[in-house]
Length: 551
Image 1 (cartoon, one colour):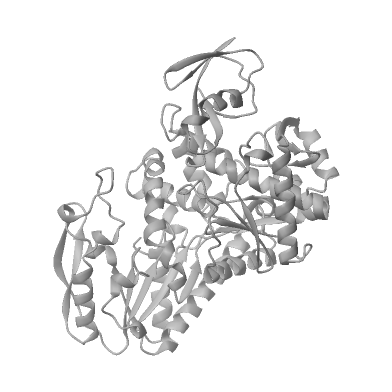
Image 2: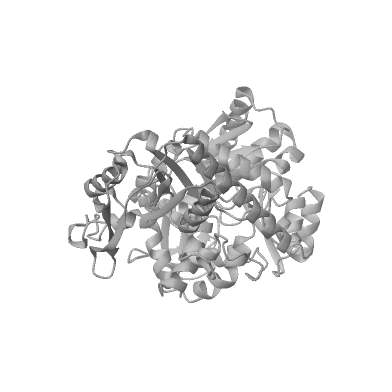
């Protein structure tokens, strides 16, 4: 018998009982399915047997680890359905590309015709598998055995990935004869994936799933055409340079060709920045370039590089941070926890910003404010501006795309740019890298270097930062005149050396430990690279240091 404690209450379970048996007893207390548990601080899948006395905590789709478990399980269910309908080879070549709104964009490089009929067929097959409640079986294979299994099943991306792993064993999941590797945890059986939809989208399909915020309903298709096109172009470029997965990247590092890749990608980004500058100038009457994007997108470095390109075209750019228009600290709104909400529009003096910008547009000379973050007040330090015929203000801040932020300015005077680090690199074909992981690691490294903030604090704040992005940035993405992807294929290998020591400082007693452990395991896939070959104007320099810009 084993004694299991849940919320201070203890129960006894016989040998052979699983964590699913415990979850079933407490499911009535939760408004959506329990997906995974922790036992004495260690994540356990529900199909695992209890092997000792422990204290158990439950996770559902409302929790980060539970939500990721649901998405992962639904993804394997999708690829299993493709295998049953179109064959194993097609399933292996089907790629989980990227997330858009509430869905995952998945395509097969033309092996499955992108039709409504095929979308319906995949959905129907998934529903059939869900109804059967087929168990997900997990087994640990010695590395040589796992590599043979990968080879026998044509999993070339897995072979390439695990060639660089030091571990002696690999966990592989099996679903009714279909084998696959997934980075993370799975739910017990297909019956747990009760909410999803599959719809036709461009050249592939969108797997629609619930969100953490609304875990009991499937998110509707969010048709973000500009964002999708930006991601698709980045994905095509990755294919052209031969780096679609972490294994491809590690190959380049080992072959000694990474320095060339860095130069090529930096040149590609500079080309895109030059194109955006040309679009701005060709408009003829743009006076305000509004740049917005989520945390750690590289907005500051981008604004500097864009300014340089504008200068080559005869313009005189002036960078202005929208943060200088924060209201004084005492007037900043607070969130539901009583903390200052610096990311809401109410934290900005919108009226004053519009008054100043209109005066500038009318040719007046004005004094711009500077926000003193130490004392929480705006100051006037003699920063005067007056716009000449070739002057352009380059405004950077999270509300740059929100019409309410610049309501008094004529639309023809504004050019809006959305920037984000949109990761298109995959771990392998079926394991995508969330864009948020790259941005979180960027912020962690930068904040430790420039603000003395430890990883524990950065991870602890991340949920609040993400909520602010969902409310104040993402709804306005599609209003941008141009989009810029600041992600670089090699950056996670570069960030690894800086992030790992920070993550190892987080202890099992800290609430952030689960996330720290997940990120450490994730970084294990990557080989280290030095920042020596990185140009000093690179966007990555904003995070690892050594930038020629004041960032």
